[in-house]
Amino acid sequence: MKTNSLIAWIRSGLLALVALTFTSAPAWADKYASIVIDMDTGQVLHDRSADEKRHPASLTKVMTLYLVFEALDQGKLKLTDRMTVSKAASRAQPSKLGLKSGTTIKVEDAIRALVTKSANDVAIVIAEKLGGTEAKFVARMNAKAKELGMLNTTFRNSSGLPDRLQVTTARDMARLGEAIYMDHKDRYNYFSLTSFTWNNRKHLNHNELLKSVQGVDGIKTGFTNASGYNLMASASRDGRRVIAVMMGGSTGKSRDRHVADLIEAAFLEITGAPTTDDDLRVRIAFGDRGNTSADDLAMAQLRLLQDPDAALVTAKDPVLVAGLDDSTATFDDLGSTDEDDTTYDGVSQGDSEAGLDPIGDLIGATPGALEPVVSAEPVPVGIVITSEVPAGLLPSATAMDQLALPVAQP
Image 1 (spheres, one colour):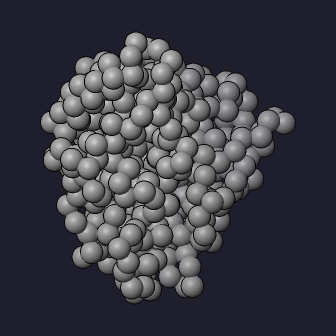
Image 2 (cartoon, rainbow, N blue to C red):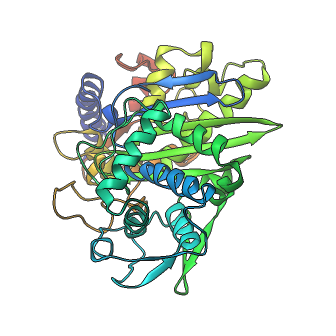
Image 3 (cartoon, helix red, strand yellow):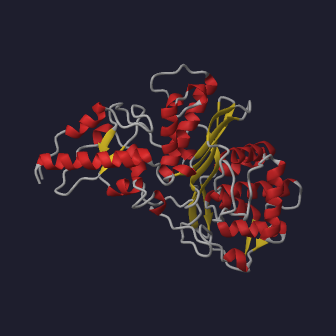
């Protein structure tokens, strides 16, 4: 294949992909929602689709834990109490500890398992202990949700396992996060656990922000195919605390990066730091400093490359293109299984984040690492949207000229 032919193929293919990308949103885009609240003032610093119905996934377990903490405070439960595992609990779908029917688990171990492993079997054990049956416990969950002002939330189980009728909003989840911190501060430190060991096996907390973002001390991740990657996180700096909730991430990595940015932007806003041309608050439509283009960028969870002209880059992974093309594949197909009424695979719920992350890998790269692809076959092209390319508009002529960059002869 001649170089000119390859460039022509790239140009024609990219134009088609640009048109597709800007005329229809990715399949996971309608799952996205986010909110950030200054917990000291109650001020909402940022929100995007915060009142739209979403699936909570394992964020559900924060309510389960709220009721556990409440029972402990009321003396109805002790940390040393042992809870019996029922057949129903032992048959729970993953993620799970693998508890056997008839065995027992201490309350404190159960708390640690929910926070770190996000164990669905443990959630059912707790529900049956406190409610007699999971159904009765769920009724208590919904009553508490209304009491806390979570008026757009309906729980159907104690774990967050897929149920089309189990819905919430980012704002409601933020209310729950605030409530469990304010009402149970003496037990909030459980959410800071980085690991939990059970039967000589160490389970790591899926909340990577505990290790990577200053001040983050909780609280919970979540994932199902229907929900996408969710994260509720709280951080404290210099006596000020914020809570951020993001729902509907396409990957665990991009979700974590986006919530990290939300938290950093929150503290910039709180401290009144002067804005710059490349300010996080502008990028993600934060406070009054946002703009439409940056807000759409935030929805897509694409971290800006440092080079403002890098509007188009070649992609080494064809899965990236497939992920952008709703007619061939979606990010729901990567490292997860389809939601089903009766059966679930091991990663259908429980924060599994071991799947492919083509977008996360791409946006984490430096501009210098994005080199022209050398191939004898047609080269798939991926699009990275930057603040130079407002959503809904075609890339600029300057950006399109990048297609004329030399492509090595095979």
